[in-house]
Length: 347
Image 1: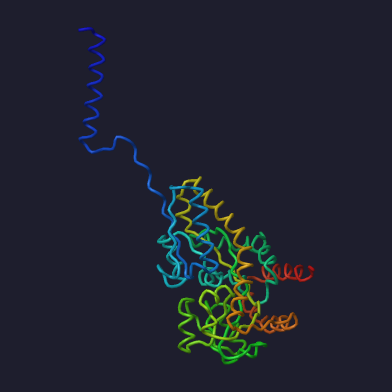
Image 2: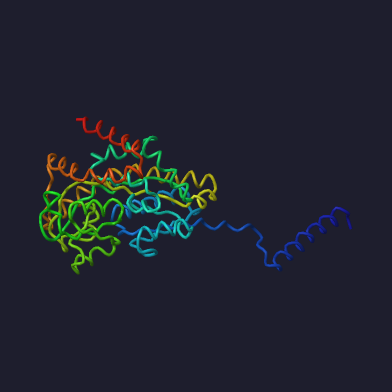
């Protein structure tokens, strides 16, 4: 037999033997596809509220960019944790991967975030965005997250907070006296309403509708879109368009988890977040207008404060600012006031 034929036959037999060994051992003949990176997102509002809509869009954009390399799971309405403070704790523990509480709910862990919850500071959405992007204001605060093992990703708009109640039309701060108002956090909001003689009660937003029905509280303070999401016209009648706090959602992640992601996945997720954030601020502005009109259409009585009244309300609540000067630092407050003065002078 020809030597070349014998050599070819021997080589073929070696290949067949090697294949048989692989099959017999149960080892895969080809490398398996890597499992997707699971990203768990938990929040406390309905899917059709500002934060819920934004996270749904983030899922869509991120999965479009990364394909089957990631799988984003969203748990709305307190399905995993009943409140955003609990979500923050779970984020720090690494049980979930992204959250977006309002600044008010970050303040127990990051006290200086109270800067963005002070009454009558942000005179427009434009001023709010400039403060967030300023290295001398927002840029001074984001390192507070790093110290807690967290990372800043973005801030989304939630709109101006308004005052809703079932008893009377509130025109002046003194009209709040005796009302029981649900607030989302004790910092800033409790002393603010106490200053007006109201009784502020901290409750999770998911508990607010039932609390009104049972008479535990007389009302709450939220943006129009939040009131629309629970059909507030079925619970109470009056709303004062006070525009007293501009509410923002700070989107954060677990720093250790984030740093463990491949660099290209980090980049794509951040770019997806930036794309959604640019869209969300415009979307929420329109949603607030539409929500307000829906409340009016369904019989709610909206009282609009005049500019002169807002000036008086701002002066009435200014002592709350002084209470936080020690926490925030007067220098940071002064920078915010300087920015406010410039925006007030703009046409």
